[in-house]
Amino acid sequence: MEFSTKCITPGLSKTGCTIVGIFESRKLSAPAAVLDRAAKGYLSNIVKSGDMNGRSGTILMLHHVPGTACERVLLVGLGPEKSFDEKAFRNALGSAFRAVNATGATDADLHLTALAAGTSDIDWRIAQSAALAIESVYSFEQMKSKREASPKALKRLLLAYGRTGERKGAERGLEQGLALGHGVSLAKDLGNLPGNVCTPAYLARQARELAKRYRMRVKVLERADMEKLGMGSLLSVARGSAEPPKLIVLEYRGGPKNQKPVVLVGKGVTFDTGGTSLKPAAEMDEMKFDMSGAGSVLGTLKALGEMRLPINVVGIIPATENMPGSRATKPGDIVTSMSGQTVEILNTDAEGRLILCDALTYAERYEPSAVIDIATLTGACVIALGHVVSGLFANDDALAKEVLAAGESVHDRAWHLPLHDEYQEQLKSNFADFANIGGRPAGAVTAACYLSRFTKKFKWVHLDVAGTAWKSGKEKGSTGRPVPLLTQFLIARSSKK
Ligand code: BES
Ligand code: MN
Ligand code: ZN
Image 1 (cartoon, helix red, strand yellow):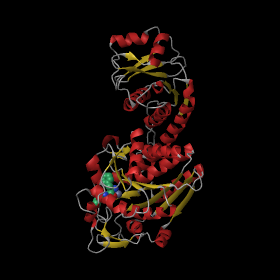
Image 2 (spheres, protein in one colour):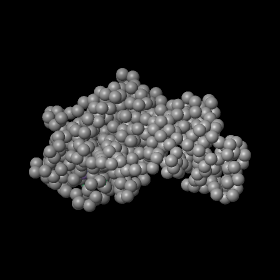
Image 3 (tube, helix red, strand yellow):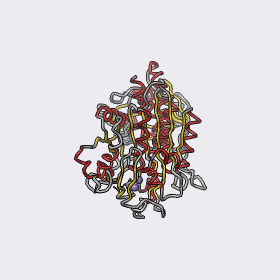
Image 4 (cartoon, helix red, strand yellow):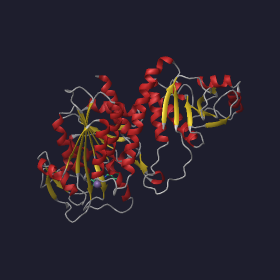
């Protein structure tokens, strides 16, 4: 898809579709009013007739509006003008792209971006529009022998701004939106690929490609390297599988040499059968998404590389399958983690924390300014928060706030959950330093408690994305979350200093 941004008058260009907004109670937005004048009141008559009332979620597609050079004009309901904020803006974009993609139009001029929405600036509106446009045409076809005959979708989109002084912001926004859209698409592709294709080795290849394309440093540690480092916890998960595990390290150096990096650690379980503690068969296919944390790290690094953000970031991905092979870890087995702490594995299905803990210890060598781990860690988090927000845990309140704010601003939200010491007691083991499970109560919290024992040396946030990284049911597929949150966090960090 091709994008451009320009300060233009609506209706004069020969585009497939000009998109303008109508506020509730039938008020034309400024670009719609300009178009209406050119069309000698054509739009205001339609609005008066009651065919478009401006309510949020409504659209009306018009063809060959007099006085315009475009094939179509799409009217999009914006809701009440007073409450036209960032959320209403995003909703309007959603309706607009859905409507345009359902027609034969392959190019469009979007004028919603010229409207003041809440406290947003032009950068944000253009970035959101580009990213959402890319999402609106995303489909995963690579495993089908014949591409589905899909309706024509947008190929070119012009994002309009209203004042010439906004050019710089619009261009910056476009660059960020494209990068974000491409990062999200990569995360979705990786998530949607089946476990027999997207293996630990496949993730390593993807990392190598990113490194080559965006000039990053890449390192892939093999089983023997991990043995040398004493990563007994990570390796205990890989024991039951014929696929060799990989520890993937990607270093992006866009900032000053002496700037301490942000480290992103992504859970890369390319398929989670549960291991010896085998999962039930129903919906087990969805455990191909158990590498979504890893996918979000690669997606975010792609976005970073495209934006050439001036910041240092390291991505660390422990990647393995969790299988019940004959050499697989058994409940009650005790392993020694890289940190030296011993773990009694009471349930082999609590494998995410077992691979993350060694990756977190490995992160210490970067003396990070902050560490964020991203993991589809617990079913309990899905029960607690559903599919709306990701669970957030932190050992530093300021960092937690920073991450929460980033998520808010791009509508990829998280919710701060507790990490009080009292919960740690649930991890007591009679035989090792602690166990890898803490029983049914507060399952998402005790998983985070487990990780907190490996994050004492840095500021840390843990994102449990079990409920947000993919959708089940008819629309089954990866969402690409939390790439928007992570990318926005890094954008905000890099412009601060
Ligand atoms: N990958 C799963 C978490 C998961 C489950 C994500 C369902 C999305 C939907 C994780 O490895 C897991 O199996 N966790 C266990 C932990 C339990 C054994 C303490 C769980 O949540 O059941
Ligand atoms: Mn599991
Ligand atoms: Zn898992």
